[in-house]
Length: 569
Image (cartoon, rainbow, N blue to C red; front, side, top):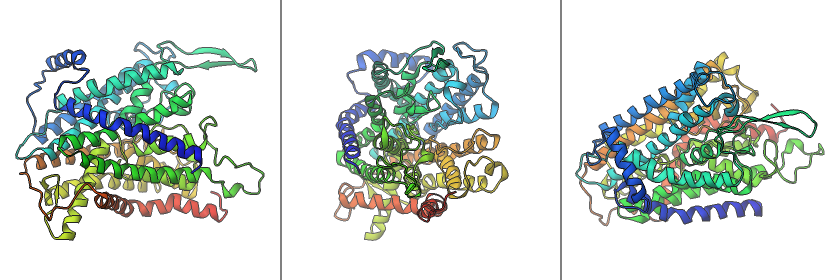
């Protein structure tokens, strides 16, 4: 890495680590129902929400009821957003006069944001009204992010409790995650972004005269508030088509830094919350260490790939001392773009400040791998924690087999039922995205959307379904995805990526909560030291490699080999 890239990476990680313990402690107190500094202000609002919704805060749910509540939340959200998109031409706050969104695109968008995927086959400033952005996109960003946090808290309770049948109340957890965690952070971030020059307005577009004397229409809107929740919730859809490369979304170096910091903020702190809730903070630090090692490996590899010269341009007279600048904003350069892309794909945010389609083949490989590891590299709010806990259970099971003992994790005996549920959740995503990718590259309707031939074209398709199934939402680019085929199949990929992971996780939480505590003995596998971190990383890499290596070999790996031979597709 260049010195500038290393300084940005390690400076950002230092800031992130400073937030882990205080935010982790705060969330532990929030979900335990204990007083917090914001309780005097927010507790009356919380009580009002329970009264209006008929929620009994002290009435807990078994895992099945918790899962049903999670599923029930999503259907009205999808219908509401679909209706806002289809009717936006006759609804208020449509200053640009956008027409209704086409049915296929509206369906894809509604499922996308309700499932925390944020896949966009449209340009936000030219397609959506202010009302659709605020009452539709932003609301679903809050709810889907908070729902992910609630599922993670439910799994933590399953690991922490013994001999109980309940794992909490979904509606209470959802309310607290939204009201106490996400909303205060978003308010502070919105004020900061507006101070830095990000627009926050309900007005329509304004006209400007360019230096050449031409007329230019500049769209405005509630961008700062949209930007803060999109980054914090992992629902990283952009108000503008260029997303965080647009100067109205990301105007300064400080906004770029804050944008990157918001992506892992909750996911990293949840590891500390996990450690505190089970009574052993070191368990959380071990999981965070595994996440950060994967993040560091990806960041170094991505920066190295983009800082290197393109061998196909050697001898053409093109100056490449700054690395591969195609598709990148010069004000961010390779360091700021690579770091943003690493966090955008590692955290499932999906936000971008550069064109991923223009990355070098190895750079594209890193972005794909980040998403293919089931959001375990910090991941989205909640999804990163329960994702890595699934791998932790598999790792402790393998460790138990190696030493000839029944596997145990944080006082819980891990048996066949738990491993089956964990593997069901882990394998649901690759099963869905690989099957849909195969269909897209053989059917004429799928091939028609390709912008490139050969391995790069395959990478475009593979990236799209990987992004959709892993609730990421970023796009490689070059793929004409706003078609009936891709709107439908990408939406199909989002459904198992969300629900076929969450439901087994909640079933797992219920199974663990009913177990009796297993006391630590001489044969218990330690789950806090470097050996444990290495075992978890090994399981993640092996499972990911076995699932995706053939597909990656057909895409970015083949493209890299072709580039070194001088071939161009």
